[in-house]
Amino acid sequence: MAFYENTIVAKQDLPEKELKSIREKYNELINSSSGKVIKIEEWGLLNLANKIKHYKKGFYIHFKFEGNKITLNQIEKKIKVDSSIIRYLTVKYKKLDTKNEFFKKEK
Image 1 (cartoon, helix red, strand yellow):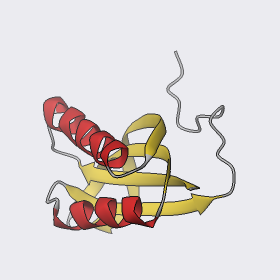
Image 2 (cartoon, rainbow, N blue to C red):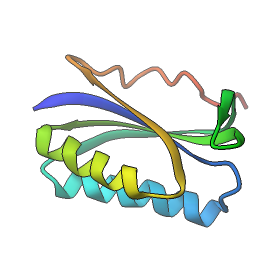
Image 3 (cartoon, one colour):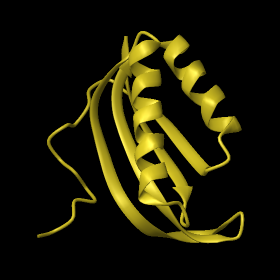
Image 4 (tube, helix red, strand yellow):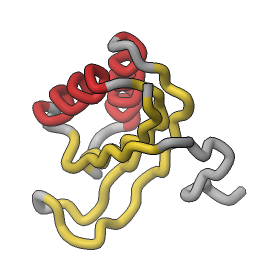
C-alpha cells in the first residue's frame, strides 16, 4: 500500500453540519475500501487564487491516508459526482509527514 494526501475544496456557503458530513463520508469511504485514514486536517475557509465556478473562497479538508488503487478509484468516483465539492487534489507519497500541520490556526 502507498501513502496519499487528498485535499478537498468545498463550496464556501455550506453549513457546518454539511462540512462535517463530507468529512465523515470520505473518512468512512477510505476505511471501507481497504484504506486507512492516518490524519484529517480542516484548514477552514481560505481564499482561492482564481475563481472556481463563481466562488472566491472554499473550505479545505485535507486527508492523509494509506491505500491502494481501489481506494483511489472509489474516492475519485464519489468526489466527481459530489455537487458540494468544487475542486480536489490527490498526491502520492513514499512517506507521510504527520507532525507538521501547515494551515494550523494559531491560538
